[in-house]
Image (cartoon, rainbow, N blue to C red; front, side, top):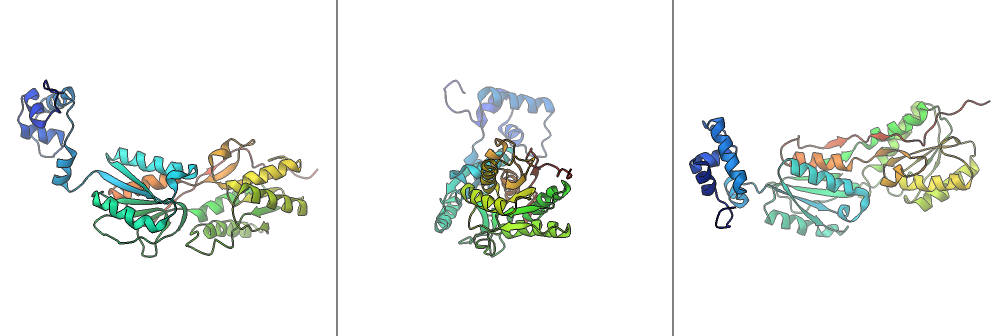
Length: 343
């Protein structure tokens, strides 16, 4: 702070460092082409630190045409714990690239998306991320090519750059994990035939199950299936009870997502079947609770954080702006065991 208590200016730093304002500006704005010595640059930075000088961002914005802000608009990401990693990814990547994030929430009222985007553009953000809780096709109103837009966990009909989890590969990985543990009597609980074919409801579920089916078919395995109308622990529990009572020889259950797997665990407990000694269980998403189950649930993680980081990097020119697929890592815990040979 200056002796008068006012916010320090570039002139104050120049006076403290005994350098010209032009020299101070060159150093503090990291402009190339300066012939100043290292000692002079260090003296300028030390003076700025002593005074607590911070550059005038508004002036920088006018000069550079950039505001160092990005907009993040969510359909329901900010109001649900399931996708909180997406927020973490946006904020972390923006901080690394010296940007601030403005956040808006539509609370599933996608008709408000256009209003939120216009509000972001009115604030001259350098780019807009639209983050979706569930991957699906949406419409982006009022396209403005001057402000780049990237969809995180979704797609648009008009090919706005987007980022999706690599669900096909994840389906292959999960099925292959069971095959590698010599499971051949496998139950699948969780395909959603009412939702999967409609990209406006989901653009990834059908892909996930295509990966599962291709891998099991290539291994000569014909699974037992129960399709569902929705994914929830209660529905998973009821389906597992039905499946296990009809097919007690199953050695593994592949659940459509972790919510379904939680219900499978409950059904196995009531039937006095242990995980994984009697029945292995594997799933998708890596909900936070998956790590607290006993035994811990092996599951393929939805990469919300990495997708968000990549989205920020795409907006700010640190990654190619294109359709991107992000791998879903398999989080191995204790719910999958090798099939024991018959005695």
